Amino acid sequence: MKSIIRNVFFPIHELIKGHDTLSYLYQLEKSQWFSREQLCELQSKKLRQFISHVYINVPYYKKFFDSDKMADDVISTIADIRTLPFLTKDLIRENIETLKSEKTKGLIKSNTGGSTGEPLIFYLCKRRISADVAAKLRATRWWGVDIGDPEIVIWGSPVELKKQDIVRNIRDRLFRTRLLSAFDMSEKKINEYISIIKKYKPKHIFGYPSSIYILSKFAKQNNIKLHDIGIKVVFCTAERLYDYQRELISDVFNAPIANGYGGRDAGFIAHECPQGGMHITAESTIVEIVDHDGNPLPPGYRGEIVVTHLASHDFPFIRYKTGDIGVLSDDSCLCGRGLPLLKNIEGRAIDFIITPDGKIMHGLSLIYVLRELHGIKEFKIIQEEPDYFIIDIVRSSDFKIENETLIRNRFKKRIGSDIKINFNYPSKIKAENSGKFRYVVSNVQHPITQSLID
Image: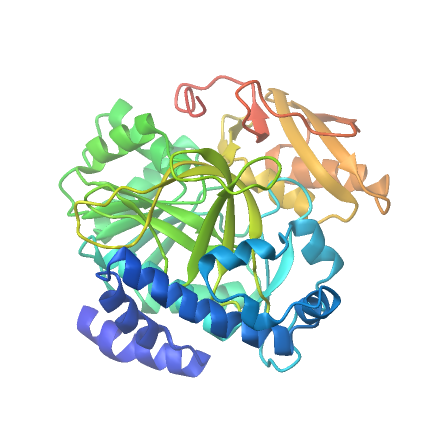
């Protein structure tokens, strides 16, 4: 079955979609063994082609080059990219139409999860999607996992299935993927998920580290054995992976943990290999680390991660500020790949919610409520008691007070009809004392969720 999926179903699927994923994958599996110098040459060549295309076809950047009287061929090396301005979420929102290529067809609308407030709307071209999928497939192959291997995904599945979600579910079944909702992690659901995992016998698990940790901790506390079902690797992404999570998950499943870093907006940025190196997808991604003032920092220094995606021709992400913190490394990995390394990645931290009836819900289930509303620049959800929440909202000019009623009704639908919510409207959301931002914070104790956030 695996061979049929890999060699027949998947190529047909990509052909129908108009994607060049397999061609990209073939190239990536050769270039990963390039030296650093060869990879820099490849990046520079792709960068020149990328900037030339963007200058000719993307109004936002044509205006920039023309107004600064800068020729596009000035950008010929990776160092030259620092002469270009940063791209931020606010700039994308303000210039979304002029960031689209005038020659492109078939752009696909996408958005971020909106964990900090209003979700970012942007567009993906087929070239960009193909590059990201190929990068992910290359990384999973490092661990002996390939197209067609049975997979369990613990993710934020929608509360109500739309037509496209139903089609996606059918496709997932065809490719031997089972989706388990991270939005309901009650004991009843965890038991159900464990039964599915035992029966399905996946080769790998993919999902939020916090959700996989919750399941693992429950299994450990209840002496449920999951170490002998044949899992090769557990892939964790979308949140910061903590050492204590890695240790417990690995112990419960008797499998290594592979950390992945990226996003819907910035793309597939880096992935961990079996030797522990967090390899940047250098063939399609240029990563910079900058300080608070935007100055570039050398390897070994902590700063904001800035990404240029070299396959985003028709809706370019050039020097895109991710808001995440990281450190570049100039070390070489024992695996022998020339791909550069990231280390100490600090992304978002999101708590679980404990409902009045004891259900455990991933905080994203509440973030999804606020991200759909206009007029919300930033927010923070604080659970003080199982039935009491405080929501801090930084408003924009189009905020409507009716949003309070909508939020209350949707929270009650998810959590329970007897909950109480108070709203505050600060001018800014403050970071924690540690410097990290926590967009959903629960002060309700539960034995399974204790110590999820350090």
